[in-house]
Length: 195
Length: 195
DNA sequence: ATATTATATTGACCATAGTCATATTTTGAC
DNA sequence: GTCAAAATATGACTATGGTCAATATAATAT
Image (cartoon, rainbow over all chains, first blue to last red; front, top):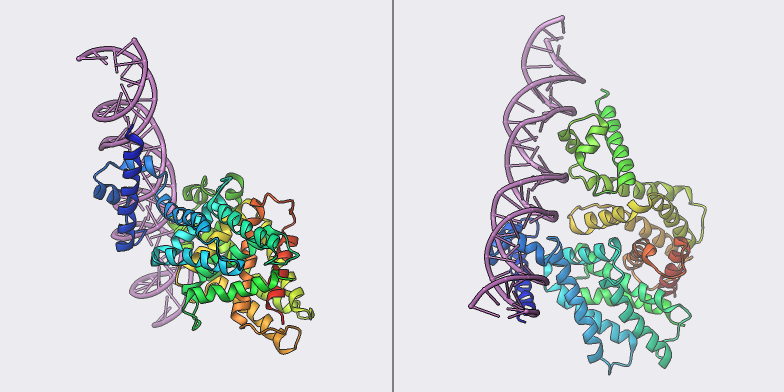
């Protein structure tokens, strides 16, 4: 049964071509018709793979977010939880900012989908779970001493993360290094949660 | 010259009718045609007052946000800066959550407009300035001792605020009081910024 | 091989946000 | 009051995201 495989390939092709076009001309300026023309498929086919035009952006975001979960295992040797979070989210930051102009739209879509749509398991909640597990682990092995509940802590870290991501490019401050900016914000949260 | 006044009234009428309809049927389900029919005006007229359908939501958000700036003077007697922020943002919280289902969309629009559109002075930046002035004042009169830069502090508070607002209703936790949840989050930030 | 069923593709079609040239109204000058 | 200019209202029109019944293709059974 090759069908499943071919389907996946086509989805990937549509995705890549769309992203390519978005980067060239901007998201709004690219029509679905344009995307399908480039792919050599009919318009209806597009919507068999992505239920809305926005889903392309969401797909980009969630696929990057999913990589984080996998990365989590690779960095098992990092003892310091703050360090670990910094490295993990730093990676994600790097991957998202690679898509420069698109990044904000992608982040917006992630938030929209996570906060507006009633998915039981959305990508931000998964991220939350990953952070929670790090925090929980750190609480157990004593590298983090905190009187706050784990979900509250994770929540604070995530809000910091997304806010950094979104506000970064409109900061008129001298701070141009987004990772450094995130670290500054995280410092505050970290001090706030520690005993 | 009554024109300006009548214009303002019509804008307000369109706004109120639209909000009313949104609450009854949901944002997506209400068409611009429907709004103008209720108002007894032509479709084109709508777009003389709001450049996009979304602008109705944005208008709701920014008008609430503007009230905060005015409130700022009324609470001048509150000495404790954390308390002041809690009261101010608590008020905003109350006013936004009054619009229940609409609230999330409104918050989303505020964020979109602030982070995606290149307005020099968007509503979040104004909020940021207000918070900054509170922080700065507290630093001066010694009610807040912090080694962090004021913009970073304000930024942290705001990110906390919006995240609370958005995540509140999807929290499956037992925490159902949004103000209490915000206070928990703010506690962390506050401890983080204090010396 | 052939028939049957399941799955995927298609593009005409629809709904609606947003535009714009034209018509109407308001304003202020004389 | 009359007129010209400026501001505002209008609704036919356009562009595009998204739907869906009809069609084609692939998988499976006989």
